[in-house]
Image (cartoon, rainbow, N blue to C red; front, side, top):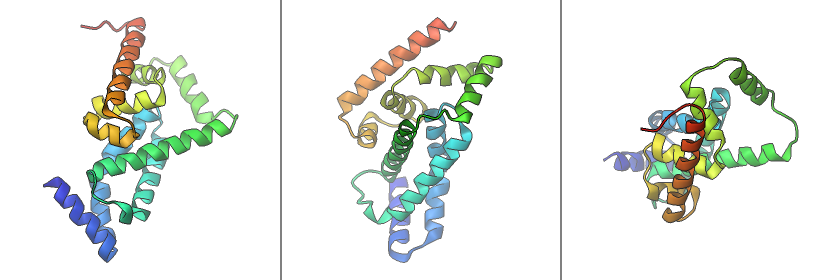
Length: 181
């Protein structure tokens, strides 16, 4: 039923340019998209909000390209994934150190902010694609098939990323005082 509602809202946006219909889509998915970016950016809430906003702008401007070949949420996560990797590529082109990154590292070293920061620190040990797969699967409860559509690789590769990511996280957390049960 939810997918039918999403399709109806998309149709209203495309056919009638109904911005209120798009507002409903934003309200429905903004928390999940912001949370996805929060995990990808290792807790940088300002950057997460900026990337989420950019995702919804791109979704709105390209909504007529949505072909209903997947769920709207999968299509939206794919846009979010691309927005994040565009951001990463633009960062790699510059050699300057971002002040926020230095502040985050300094803050983490100066204050033990607890388990939440430990999770973000452990996520830093993962490759970007592993972090994306782990975040979507374990934190957002997205299926492996949907993740495959989002990151653009086969389901078996997603499973490999999840396995490697889980193993790296376990090693990091064990080395930092967390014992597995």
